[in-house]
Image (tube, rainbow, N blue to C red):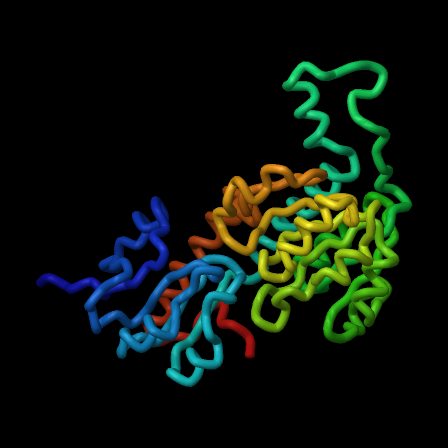
Length: 305
């Protein structure tokens, strides 16, 4: 007896991971299929309202990774579509990237490698004197799992730590600063770990960037939309901002020419939580959530709220 595999929308295409979805008939967008009950996506790409409308049987969206910013959560709830995501899987890895970008800017790794590769290493100092981490002040925007992991690492470097968020958290021992601009003025490095969605779009605007100052650094491992990218580039070019370490951008892939003449930056192509270990755990999480949905069981990692 032949059993028909359920159709599963995978958007965008997830390459080799799709080979693990052997229990399903993988379908890509656009499609005219009306029998699709579940979809797998990456949070910042998501499943649009128009796609939800075109899939009358859709009951579950499984996000590979923690982000869900590409989904209109209120609309999905209205349509009765459950959402799961990969919480507590890659936050440590993302925090590693944040610390790496901070060190790269404080110690001028990017400039140092350029000098070495171009044959410009002239003793005694190949690049200007750099900044010490120990005793420096880090302001963390967002104290979720990633923000807490950044703070843990910063503490090991002997840094002073304060953080900003919409509200204080009684279980967080680091000093809370309710005024984002005051935090920006206080810190040597502002690390952005806030959730990236409409509520945080351009949270780091021109005034906050100016407050970080000509000797300060901004590190962003959240989402590109959280920073006013045009204002950031202008401040870097004018010297109003000392430096930036960026792993995320408003447009991804970000246009090469956009950063051609922007100084004092270390840029990485959304490395985020893409370690081998996190990708394996994330894939297992997706597969188990799909199994549970089709079995009529409670999702393993449903989106809270």
